[in-house]
Amino acid sequence: MPTVSARTSLNDYHVLGTDGFGRSDSRANLRRFFEVDRYNVAVAALSALAEQGKVSKETVQQSHRKYGINADVAPSWKR
Image 1 (cartoon, helix red, strand yellow):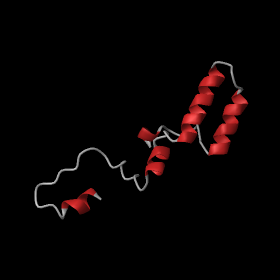
Image 2 (cartoon, helix red, strand yellow; image 1 turned 135 degrees about the horizontal axis):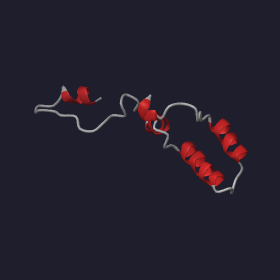
Image 3 (tube, rainbow, N blue to C red; image 1 turned 120 degrees about the vertical axis):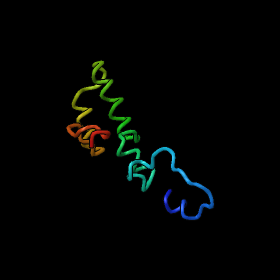
């Protein structure tokens, strides 16, 4: 979108920041890609609780399956 807007500008046009590296068709998809959506946050919280012994590791594994989160993939910034 930034380059489309640039065509209508009468002045110099510079794009600042990112657009999600081409993954910004929606904010929800962008949050999911960068693993900061509500599901990834919930799984991270459960993982922290499991490290403290407050929930079982099976609970964490179930949450991965329930929310479709694959813990074995590279971090988003490396994909």
